[in-house]
Length: 315
Length: 315
Image 1: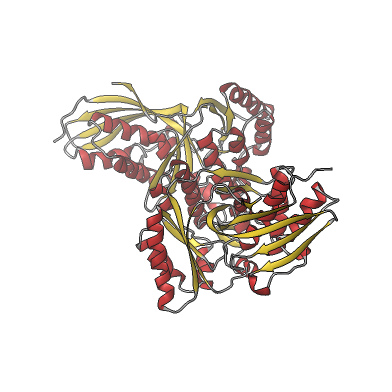
Image 2: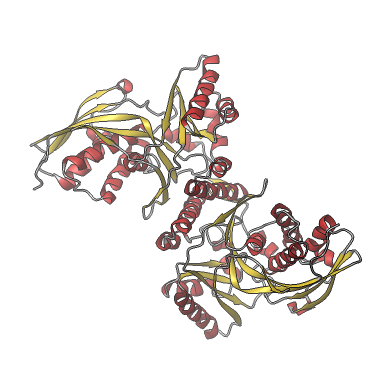
């Protein structure tokens, strides 16, 4: 039986931007801020309990079997500490159904925290598996382009799901993100259901040219190449209409110097990648003015790319 | 008026492998061997003449307006030496309609040679433009995934055609290629016409995951990642049936240690990328035995990746 180093911990895990324009279902990166926080307290009796949820407007289930923070805890404890239990407090700071990887952040925080408490007992492959199971419950599809960067940090390529093959990509030093969240909900299932089953081969060629260019741009810290490659000719045309004033916000971001601008995950948040923090701040300012003019409620975040993944807030 | 440094030159330009499994229409690399050779001789009178073609079985037109070696010469001379002319002898060493970039090699050799004779007068953008025009006549479509690597050497990404955006990719030191050409002709137009106009989004996601993985693998010299990424779920299933015993040759190559195996360009040649020359030799040997068993005529080539593009054979 594994001996406990300590009994409780508080963990932060980051918001994430999935898809990243040209990388639908295969790319994602983590933000430095914002993120979700969980407090974990180990118990001697088996079982996972969600004892409190702060934030989320009462919409998140406290049944751990139905909660994306609960599921990975159940799987982790079953495998690595079947005779013990854990109480979870969830401080939900990320807006729900926002495209910012809210469910993924909570799952990543729980897995990172439990693995820390139990002395890094779990191999990465187990953490990834449990994380994907949590996303499967949250979104009806085990997509990993939020939860894997939330767990590992940085810019992540999921080359393949079957078998799972993860590639950590380099992150250019001056890459910053302005992210604006208009306060409407877009459910991932719905955003997925409006996509066509088939796409033109010609458009697919454009898309994989851009994906290839983006990867090369990240390796070379070639901001011009990154900028030229941040185009989505497949998914954005369908999903843009779910998002208030998407075209206006995007054009404004590009006009103010963003490298590229697109839908974060399945939306409605809009991300703009920028070279340097001051550009990101200027771009963010301009994006929010678009919403303020039409009295659309929003949250705005300016952030670097999180390179480390979750972090311990208090031992 | 530009003063001639010299009046004649002999140039070699390499065969190329386009598509490279997952990179349909966006990736290509140059081989060290084989290639086409041209002899260029400048004249004082304007006009481009193809004075001799050796090889090609009498199938290539001597009208320079219809010949892929003639067209780029016409464009080059129009722009950079309108009052002079050039006689071209073409030594066609590459089999026609083989998927080895035969028309591209001749065009690249002519452009490289003329630019050398005129003291590097043409910017790269002009050379690329003229080269694409030649391919447009040869194939009915200005695709550049053969002619651009033939002209520049190495592993090339064409991120976009409109506007043209070329990325030179790194080439891992030990990357070798076994290429087998079964002696049947597959016309590019035909190989293109059998492709579907629309493809499943789900397959496209797999393909761009693999493209992204291949690019990352080339940057990291990560042969396992390169190997896992060398998959084509879009085009190969349609074109494989045009090629004698494709499945058998591919499986044999993989069984003998190839990193990956696929259709070179639009076929019928089959390439296998390998780690190290000795593996490529073993793989080539095994591939040819598949054809020998069924008495299918073939050419076999074992080659490194050409990093320099065309080269001057005699000043």
